Image (cartoon, rainbow over all chains, first blue to last red; front, side, top):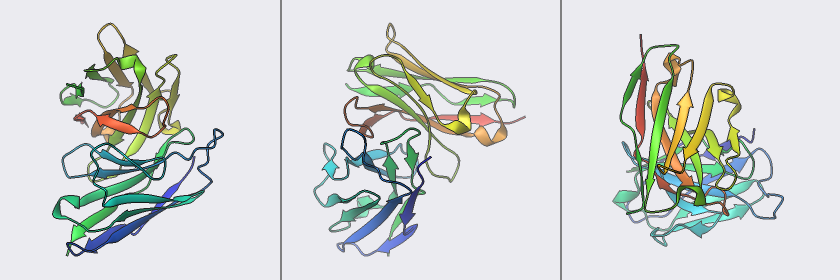
Length: 112
Length: 120
């Protein structure tokens, strides 16, 4: 199975400031079709996850443009350009290139 | 309205089975794949299994091999996840999620979650 490792596991941030989360996979996420199926999800307490980014950098419908994804191969990053109060919660990276799909451990974003 | 509505909370004894339903509305069930994910209390997300949009082909996480089955019923637009031989560490919230048949990992629609409690 592909292991997804996120850093940091906890991230205290100041409102209005930028932040980033890293995700590293144990092997390349380039699919045989040439695409890379790396997604980012956000979960608030008591709610189901919400898709933010898919295929490394494509924003899901309705996701603010302060969220951006980048990376390639085995190293990926989610950036929030200006953190807002509603961004608190846990962020997960997920690979869907190979079965079984696997998630990172999660990064908890908190406001300082 | 496009949504996934899951069945209500389940309380089961160890060794029993549970079958969680996920009713799709506002779209054609088999135009999308369906993924099942669970989350134990205070823990992260764990992928369980997946059923293809096109041919009903399934894939399961090794951790659940032989204990889990995911199916769809197009006549009722409902997906199901059955987990057998329940243990206390199967206590979790179980989610269904609609996945694009073209963009793997594009899970844009989630059910509200079904808590399953396994306790003697």
